Length: 54
Image (cartoon, rainbow, N blue to C red; front, side, top):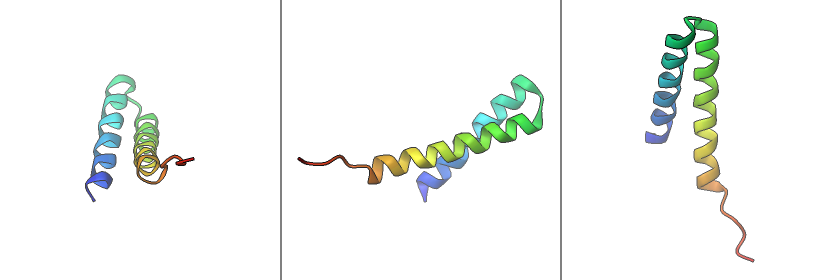
């Protein structure tokens, strides 16, 4: 659950910064969604992406 919330927090931060820089809510929402999904995928890679022991 903390990872999920961290992904949401980082997405919101990214969207807020993008909105402040561009003043375009559509672009800010897009960047927020992308940052959130990439954060979750990064956590999944770290958790489940263990390398082979060969």
